[in-house]
Length: 312
Image 1 (tube, one colour):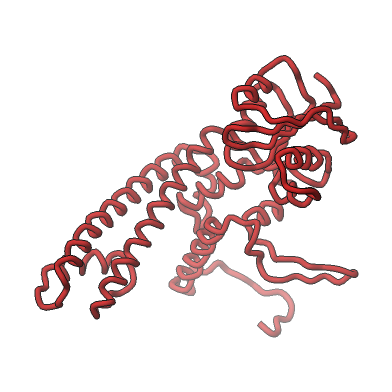
Image 2: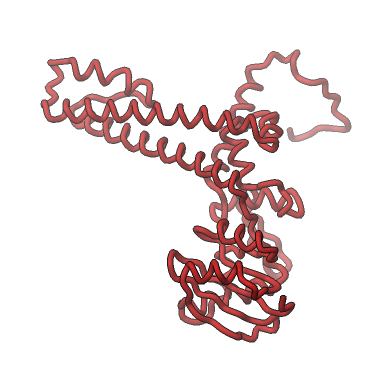
């Protein structure tokens, strides 16, 4: 193993740009290779002190492959690489920027998922896709009906309940073509609902078998979906030095724009965050707040305030 040799990889689908460089930034080689050649490179006799790549599609697979061959791995966030790209965007420049980013101590590595964690993430994404498609379909059905003066309440349940009644009503002046469309879409809507319920069952089953998810599920306001999202996003937590770093990863920390010794703290940032997971956490927190309002005062834990309380 060459102690001072870094392998920087710009990942893609079929063509991969690899850059050999030393820790002083000297480039020894920068060329494009095929997928088969990259596999041979990572599993061959030539060893590197560090293998670095940009976090993107397929990066978890390549990181696991390199790790199996006892390489030290570093997966760089895309924003860190973009900030170091001072020249034109080419594969060569991208690979070099990835290698330079790996040398900077303040740029931390992204967590690498195991096969099990990625499988659970795929399960969660498949469920989210079915929900999005069902929502889009239901909105289109409502739009069709509204054009003919039929307005339905919010939610999937009222829509599913009213569609058969609307199709059987001969006095609503709906054309036969629209009735055929709504009948077909109603069947598709039922299929989406069935698939979502199927994925819900799979997620509940896998969460009950995962140690981290089981611990997370014990928290108030955290169900199987939120527990799975937290586990996939944060992993075992070893990548985070402090709890604030984990909160920032999810997108729960405020935006900061400080200069000249003046601290300016803004609203919660809408970038660099898992918006869907953050939304689920917010919904779980709101459910707790709602339940607290329904509790009898005698069920609140005893609390004795200390000192004067003003402006509360």
